[in-house]
Picture 1 (tube, rainbow, N blue to C red):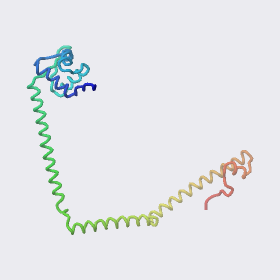
Picture 2 (picture 1 turned 60 degrees about the horizontal axis):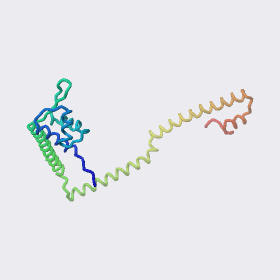
Picture 3 (picture 1 turned 45 degrees about the horizontal axis):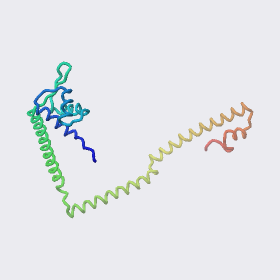
Picture 4 (picture 1 turned 90 degrees about the vertical axis):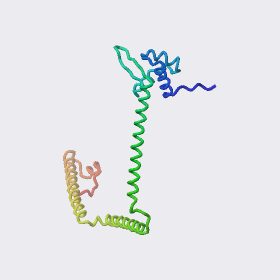
Length: 205
């Protein structure tokens, strides 16, 4: 036997509104918590949440008096609320229709001069050919960048900087070798082997 399906939130909200509309009375939360489960089948655990959702949507009025909160709602209030909501939705629909018409006109205006004629097709084909030619020329230009005087000058400048850096490190290696030979009385071949220095290590030309 299948379990009985519970009420949806919207069903609970409508049933709770019936409590107010049928009695036309003012209630405290504890009153609603007693009435809702018995007369409307709303689970006790969800009463407060459902009531608060109605207050948040301005469908039930709430006022704090002293230490207690009082709740009430009348059919006329609900009718006005629904009417305001309906008016708001109608306004949104109207604005959306105007926006759609405006966009439609813009599309139609943009289409002017873009009719599929033989001349337009020929121009589009020519444009495509020119774009392909431009891409080809850019590729060729990239190939010849190595011959660009500015690029060559930059490479030469970089080479000078690199060579100076190599010379400094070569000086450092020779200084370390000299210090090691004097400090530990090692011969040069022993130092080269210990530090992995090639026998033909020397300054670059």
